[in-house]
Image (cartoon, rainbow, N blue to C red; front, side, top):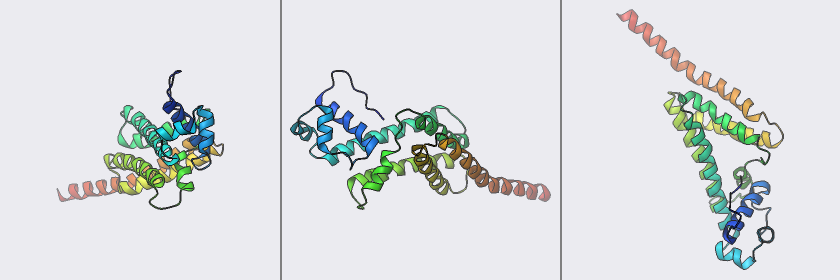
Length: 208
């Protein structure tokens, strides 16, 4: 994810752009303030004037990642597909992301792995990000009339996380593979409800 800035960017913009690029590629804990200062060509005092701590800069980075997540969700919704097909379209959006030349995995996953302390603001922000993804899937599952939308959301989240890591490990088709697994989950989730409706219809016709 790149933060687009003009050629005459302010020091604050350069700091954020540089931090976002470094955090996305290397993780938050692996990147020191000195590296951000050197790459953004500002004085350390300038960085701390805009961001009193590295954690505050990291929080802004995670907010930008949330915007990225909302963007691909909006991309799915713009296609105006039936809800069940929108659930599968999630993996089409991820497929385009994984095929970008600068793809380097998901920094939100890296944050959860790096920040183990429960309640730490960075971990809380990462977990909120994940919850937002599940909320999106849960809503689509509910609109599709599937049994247990919460379970579908959890299953989709596992597929998303797994495909993110697989793509980072070099499997450029990870999202497409995940989509096929998701398609099987949808078929299994929808089948019992269809069977119940058919059985109800048969009972109704017999009663008539």
